[in-house]
Image (cartoon, rainbow, N blue to C red):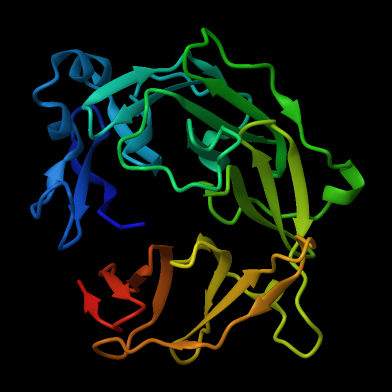
Length: 319
């Protein structure tokens, strides 16, 4: 796995006459990014692809989640109805776009969960890491929420089909879900062919959706007696480590110790063990918030809005 960069969606200017903000989606590369070393706009990826550029049109492009060169984006405009969502799957390597059928949305989409899966994820050989050269096949998953922003049902769309499949409800009871919170991160982590989301109900749980069978599972994250209780943390992050294990990262509020909990491969999906803490060494004292992690590269932000990439192997910091 390698972290090539990240997209930033930010307000650019404000139309003082129409009272409408304008937004710009910018790609920020890492030092060894396959997409070059300079910042660039999202639409520049398709400057040589007129058909793809037409699909994007004059909409605001909101990046949602990426995997193996595939990027799921939402097309937004001031005139877009709230109950209809327009999504596009962009292949940044092939410079192509696939516009999905409109998704009827009777919930607040900003509270949704989403994932994009490749052909390898949805095959019987999903334990193999997908290569950068992804095929044209993809599957998009969207978690819809109820009026309290709690996970309710799952919508799926597969390339080659003409419409979204009928949504399937999660195997929760109303009593069981009472008091639960929203998904910790809207974008899923894909591990061994299954898309996982992290959410909290009394303690932390994972929601998993098998890419091949579409089976939905829920599992509590249980920690051994005597360890710090992970469910007391507000900033837990689900991720895949460089060793290919499903893990949860958390940074202590005082000090710069990074904790890592890894799911055990003993048949019990709920058993997680804590690895030795990683001591982060920022260039100066600052309050940090974890934005994400991939391939041993930790993305953090301070209270001033500065974003850093931390190499967990070398301890190096890059702004």
